[in-house]
Amino acid sequence: MTAATPTLDVGGSLELNSRYVWRGLAWSEGVVVQPSLWIDLDRTSLELWVNWDPTPPVGPAVMNEVDLTLSRQLEIGRLELEPAISYYHYPHQDDSPPTGEIELTGCMNFDASALSVSVSMDYLEYSNAWTASAGWERWLSIEDWEGSIAIEAGWGAAQFNEAYVGVKRSRLLYTGISFALERAVGGWLLGGRIALTTLPEEAIRQLVDEPTLIAIGLSVGR
Image (cartoon, rainbow, N blue to C red; front, side):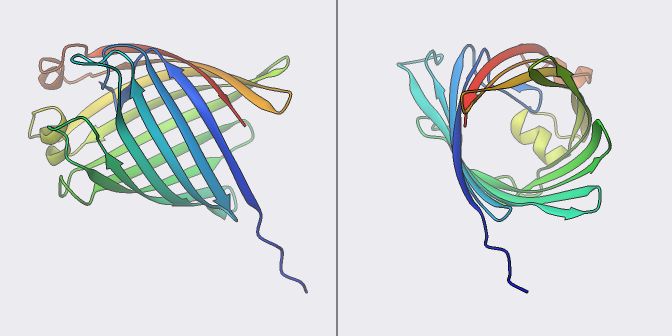
């Protein structure tokens, strides 16, 4: 029997988002541009992701984050597992040292929905800073568009919350709901997304300027 030849895919996308929101926290005051490039070889992927902020609080427009992620997709029946390791670099941000995370995501797929659980831990700057999240996603078809509705909740360990918020206690960090649509047009994939996130814990809400956020995004990729 001849072994299957590994498939090499290369692609990328460009996203325009009204805010940069990560784990329920705002990392921009306004619109951001987020391009990405990826290479996939037989379920192993390497992705380069960039955040460009045209209106930072101080100074001119800057590229203030560059992420590199290596991941592997595994399937066991309906269960998908994806271990990943990421490196985060923050140019033009003197108070944000480079760091990285290892992550394991598990996803159980059903006919038109999926349940997922993810655990991440910092391995560089913030030792033992870990987070966990759980979510549910429902897929939809609306004429020529494919869509989804998703809900998610995330937990932050004491070390993570201390590093990113200032509360050295394990807490429910965020909850959120989102709606997304995408459509293939002439070899391109066009998409849009709206997401609402909130920080339910009062101890954390008091330390951030905007505990509830709405972000709208548009994307194009292939």
